[in-house]
Amino acid sequence: MRIGLLASNPDLPSNQRIMEAGEERGHRIRFYDVRQCYIKLDAEHPEIHYRGGRLLNGLDAVIPRIRPDLTFYGCALVRQFENLGIYSLNSAAAISHSRDKLHSLQHLLQQGLPIPTTGFADSPLDSDDLIDMVNGAPLVVKLLEGPQRRGVVLAESKTAAESLINAFKSLQANLLVQEYVKEADGKSLRLLVVDNKVACAVERQALPGQFRSNKQHGTSIVAARISSEERRIAIKAAKSMGLRVAGVDIIRARKGPLLLEVSSSPSLDDMEDVCGKDLAGALISAIEKQLGWKRRLASPIGTSDASSNLTQ
Ligand code: ADP
Image 1 (tube, rainbow, N blue to C red):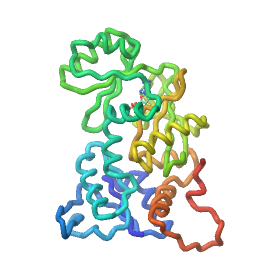
Image 2 (cartoon, rainbow, N blue to C red):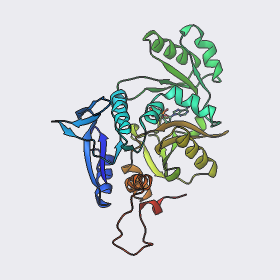
Image 3 (cartoon, helix red, strand yellow):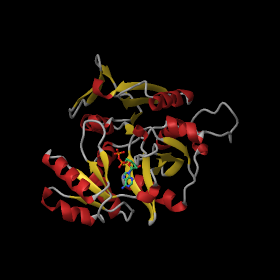
Image 4 (cartoon, rainbow, N blue to C red):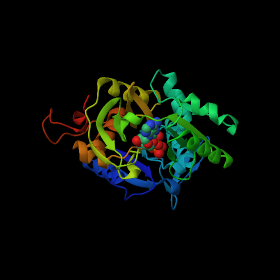
C-alpha cells in the first residue's frame, strides 16, 4: 500500500517507528509535513498537493499525527483525504472532537463513563461556588487553550484556587476546575487502544513532589496490570469518540478508575520500550485490516504478525 504519515517532525521517535513498521511490512510509506500539504476544493478535480506540486491523490491511506497547534489546518487536510476516499486511521472529526477537552469530558459522561467531578464557568463572579461544586480545595485548574500545552495547576487551598481562577479569568482564559484525586499519588495509567483493543498499558509516575504524570513532565513509566473495568472504559472511550488509535489516560481514584483524557496522537516509542511490543506495527495492521490488504507471507501460514501481539 501507499501510506502517508501526516505529521510535523520526521525525527520524532514515534514517527520514525511508524515509518519503520510500514516499510517492514512491505508498504511504501512516506512522511509528509502537514504544513507543506495544500488542497484544492473542486467538484471535478479535488486535489492534495505536497511542497513543489507533487500530487498525493494516489495514496491508499494516511496516518494523521496532528500537533495540537495545527489542529485546524491538520483536520482540514485529513478531511480532504477522506473526501477523496483515502482512508485515514483517525478521522478528522474524531481528532477535532478529542482536541476539545471540555466537549470530550461532556461526551464521555453522556456515554456513562466516569470522569473526575469538573466545573466550568464563564463569569469570575461565582468562583467561590464553582470551587464548592468540585468539593473544595485542593483542586486542579486546567487551562483549555494555549499555544502548545494546556496548563494544569494544583491549587492547595481555597484562597489559592480563588486567586488562580480569578487571575486566569482576568486574562480571558477558559479553564476547568476539577476535583483533585490525591490518592492517585502522582500516578496515572496510559492505555493504548488500537482497533478496539488495548494494545499496551503503562503506569506513569510523576517526579517526586509533582502531581502531573503525563509524558512532558519527566515521568517514569512501567508496564501496568489493568483491571477489566479499566480496559472496558478505555475501549469504550476510544470507540465512542470514533478514534481507531487512542491514548487513554486514566487516574485511579478511591471511587474507581476515572478518565482524564483521550489523545488522538499517542506516543508509541516509550510504550514499546516498556511493553516490548510492536505497537507501530499494530497501527499498520489496523490499516491493512480496514483496507482488506493481504500480506504476501514469506513464512508459513500461522506465523505471528503484529496484530497477534495485541493483548485482549
Ligand atoms: P494535559 O492536557 O496537560 O495532558 P491532563 O489533564 O492529562 O493534562 O493532566 C496532566 C497530569 O496531571 C495527568 O497525567 C495527571 O497525572 C495529573 N492530573 C490531571 N488531573 C488530575 C486530577 N483531577 N487529580 C489528580 N491529578 C491529576
